[in-house]
Amino acid sequence: MKALTRVLGIDPGSTITGYGVIDSDGVRSVYVTHGHIRVKGESFPERLGHIHEAIGDVIDHWNPTSAAIEQVFISNNPMSALKLGQARGAAITAVVSRGLSMAEYSARTVKQVVTGSGAADKSAVQTLVKSQLDIKRVVQVDAGDGLAIALCHAHSALGGTRAIMPTSKRRSRGRGLRW
Amino acid sequence: MKALTRVLGIDPGSTITGYGVIDSDGVRSVYVTHGHIRVKGESFPERLGHIHEAIGDVIDHWNPTSAAIEQVFISNNPMSALKLGQARGAAITAVVSRGLSMAEYSARTVKQVVTGSGAADKSAVQTLVKSQLDIKRVVQVDAGDGLAIALCHAHSALGGTRAIMPTSKRRSRGRGLRW
Image (cartoon, rainbow over all chains, first blue to last red; front, top):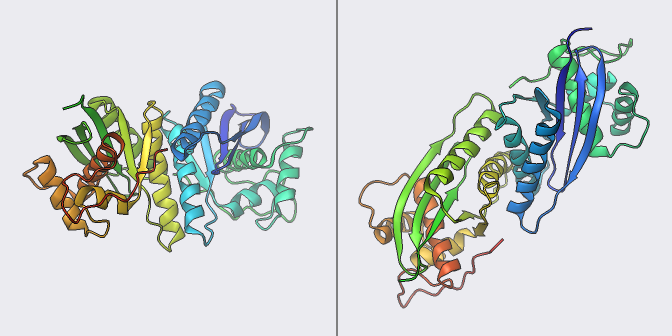
């Protein structure tokens, strides 16, 4: 087993931001922690500040050396896109202001790497994340997405975009986008 | 003249973020500085980090005690809204992470307070900002918008939403939204 890299995956949202932290050598991954930030604050600048500070606290506490985020599915609602963009800006700047690089992966690539199928449904992703990381307890869905993104980044950037559990169905055609 | 408050106005954008700083007692305002940040960085997380850091540097250097931003005009393009949201999140968190409050005003209120008409065109706003602050040189347009937002906040929050230069046409019906 190669040296382990600590990876933070973030799933930002304007009301809940999930995150997951794993250690990985690109082939084997070990669960470290996960959680979700329920955004607090009376005003929207305060709420953005809360996301920014909470992600900063996660980084300061767990010391990941690499981070990743999912590319956004753009809805038809520009106001939702703006709010999500603001939350992403708050989370991303917490990462890059600490000198960490930030990778970005499409939802399809995350699914492809974690489950072997880019068309997998959300519950399959959550189930395989828990199984892969040997987590027995209930994982809040946004935190599960954070762990999925961390797994995707670990296995794409460190392991050459290989699927986590090779099966005959599994072909890792999706490439993680390095930034 | 009452004690002066130093106000930062920010006009965030995904390519250029303008800002302006003034000292004001709510009736009289004095120009301090203005500038624009041309966003740099190869990746979008780097670019957001650049906005965040540059606005942080402005705050650390000029020490405003209050800040304001313009409410966003939401276009029909969700991708543009997302990018603008990310830039706003990067700028806003630079403000609130330093413990400053952040006010938000509609474009109409900014125009109303600065020119006396919520329907004023952009060039009228820029001209009146320069005249009000006695600025002789050319001001980049996003920086001019930053100064306009600072003036709006100063005269709304400190001066009771009074128009800067009362005329018969000028009625300050727009209320700045405090957050």
